[in-house]
Image 1 (cartoon, rainbow, N blue to C red):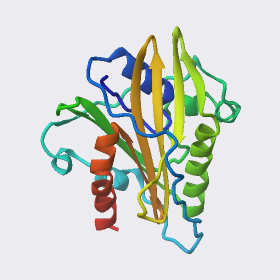
Image 2 (tube, rainbow, N blue to C red):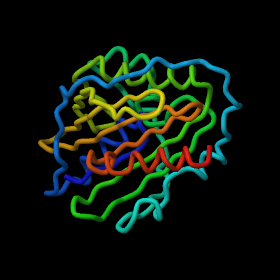
Image 3 (tube, one colour):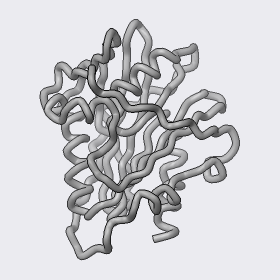
Image 4 (cartoon, one colour):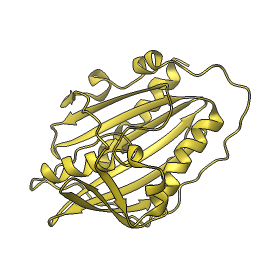
Length: 230
């Protein structure tokens, strides 16, 4: 099955695109009951002013960072008027904006998505956010906790209804705080798998989403690019 990715919160857009673009290719399914991530307590130490969106944009991955076979995708419009979540009160409480993929609620942000035409024909996306360490930790933690509080639930947009399963994954021990999860999307007998890993490095939050193998391959590159210019 071909995977399509969007922002860390883009449940409906991601699911609808993934299932619409299904083929005979399939991404490896990880263990949704893998060991819990090793989260570190955020430290609200004195920090410089948050980075601007323009500065964050310069720190995003580009084709030269990823290598051959990657093409940058145009930003997709975000719609959330007809999105509903059922079977997960904690996620529904966060609102339609969250479920539809409008991103985390931080004004300073940048994002990019790439299609990969390699052997598994998948996609990978990156988001960068900047704010105080405490606000970043609270914001991403609230969303991951809500999604992981429900092993399964449904997201509907128009006539598209997608069953979603979530499982916490072990995140790499890098940065100041780490979160990771595996999401499965299914409808009409088709299935798609996406991994999402978030790492906070000081006043920057890095989120990489997509085919599990691509997330694992490019996460350290994303972190390195952010840290090289700090």
